[in-house]
Amino acid sequence: MTDKDVKYPQPGKISKVVRTGLNLAGGSIPYVGGLITTVSGAWAEHEQDKINTFLNQWLQMLQDELKEKERTILEIMQRLDVADEKISDRIKSSEYQSILKKCFRNWSSIDTEKKRELVRNILTNAAASDLSTDDVVKLFLDWIDQYSELHFQVIACIYQYPNGISRGDIWDKIGKIMAREDSSDADLYKLLIRDLSTGSIIRQHRQIDYHGNFIKQPLRKSGRGSTQLTSAFDREDLYVLTALGSDFVHYAMTDIPIKVSYEPEFQP
Image (tube, rainbow, N blue to C red; front, side):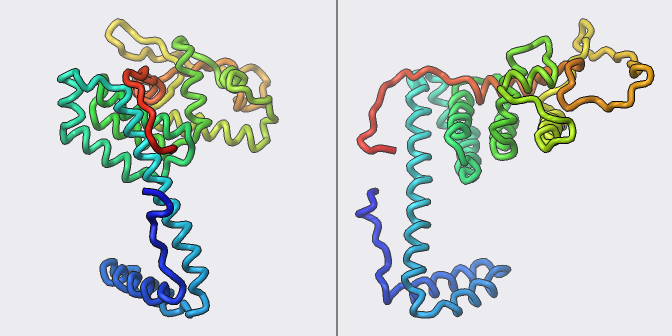
């Protein structure tokens, strides 16, 4: 569909059309009906041009979203070997279709190109890999909505150090300038680490026994006479990814190479 194919309501007709549509919407969604009816009744005929502009922008936004979804689907298909019977059965399964529906229902949360690429990778790897269950894959999609690109930078940095890396070293590796402990940057960083820790994506490095059980660490005594709290950029405690965090990197940050070259006729 091109912009020429979209038929915008003409001035002089929009008020009646829009008021009718809003009244119908108000009838189908009872708890907003009163508000919609009030708003539609308040629109005067001289406001038709403003409404035209609003609808024009709204339709353009929907068109852009459809183009992004179409581009994402095409990029996924370029990376999958659909001749593989296992992959073919997977993408046709109701379980995989459920993952796609969840993704596209929440598409408005994908507000950057980087996040779109992460979602594309998740959908591609979910079709080609069974490393994690579908419930875990759906959780990964929730993380795209829940976390910022800075969160994902920290995750990617920690992944490179399986034996652990300190908060201060992470800060340096992602290219940040050292900040005061009472600064907003320090507060933001502490919040980010807490987000990832409570989300079971990262944890402090701990020793494990032969069976994979964590070994309790002895309590450390603080330095004699120390009056300072642990720094936001502490360089002693080390952080690693949890099993969930490692699987997220596999699904969201691993781009399967393109297998089929294709140049669409339209420009996304």
